[in-house]
Image 1 (cartoon, rainbow, N blue to C red):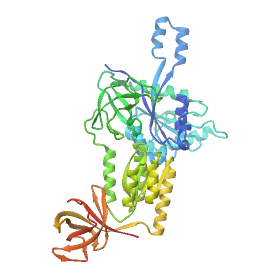
Image 2 (cartoon, rainbow, N blue to C red):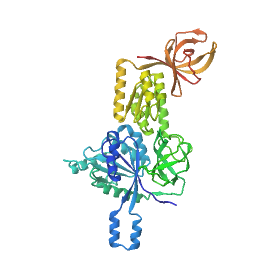
Image 3 (cartoon, rainbow, N blue to C red):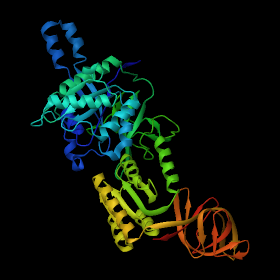
Length: 506
């Protein structure tokens, strides 16, 4: 049986325009102070109750006991808020936030007006086709000509094809101060009004349906996920399928860390007991999810195989899957015209010995975001001369990586791929060696060059080209379009279908 459910509201806007501060005032907490640099760097979901005090007072004064009892049922209304990051690196996460929301609130600082991430957020909101309202924040700033700034912002919105109520449209503009709370009550009233107009419904009896808005691997709790329920009721002990993996819920918690036995429509919950860390965007109940984010990951791998390849090899570890996606998307700007960064491995969790071993074997650096380095891994990195850098603020990470790339370009420590081939056959050689039968698809490969073998985008190993043959004749080089046999020293465990690349350090 369908009943009214709380609206799901996403808060979007440019960095430092006060999104988290606004939520802090609403839910009387201090999340912004706990974030590194005061910047939200992962999606958070929170549910709050909004008291309708004015209706209660009116009832007491003018209505009978029966009507008073009816009104008491709706004195406390709930709203679920999704807080999304404002930094440019988190475009994919903001897009995800808009897609799961019923209502979008775009926060614009009164002194700044519309900034780049606000424009981007508008595109996501329009694509998601959800009701929009504008919160003009920081009206408490001294020497601010609010009337002039409001007109400027309304004109900017009009240029973005958003028509506010004063111009004959249906988008409300609410001036407020997230710091003092002025105007916040009007914003909440408007959210409840829009939700009532759209008659949002949910059925607590049907099977639970929801979407993962954050996930990570906790060294004590194991795989955990923040799940936003859209419909149905989820209970502790339920058997679920999330991202195609069966699991049993052994714990549920609300945003404040309080244990829950069940959760209904529009409720955000952290769930424990998962078999694996699900992809952000995974849908509860789907046997198999064809994730657009996964497709983007595969296109990135294909992109790394194309064009001129001067590469800096990196291993990336982040605290959460959403942060990891944002970092990879940002670093990929270096690969616009040529392959500069080669992602050897990426994942969530702290940096361990296995990451350092892999970095040492292929000559990669290790980048960590909001993660720790295991003491044994740190010691191994010192012995193996592996560079590890960890960060708490994403733009500092991006600036440092850019500096590293530029420095390596200056001193000539990047690589150039000289040729590339497909392994199409294998032949025995001697007692234990094998010859790789290859077809050259790019460039030129010559005897004595350094060779690496790649399988499905993952590096298998590096070696040298000991012998190069055409039929039974020893040759010095082979070019695009030709077939040849390759003998590696030291040997590598190659397979038919692998890619071979010859390269040099420049």
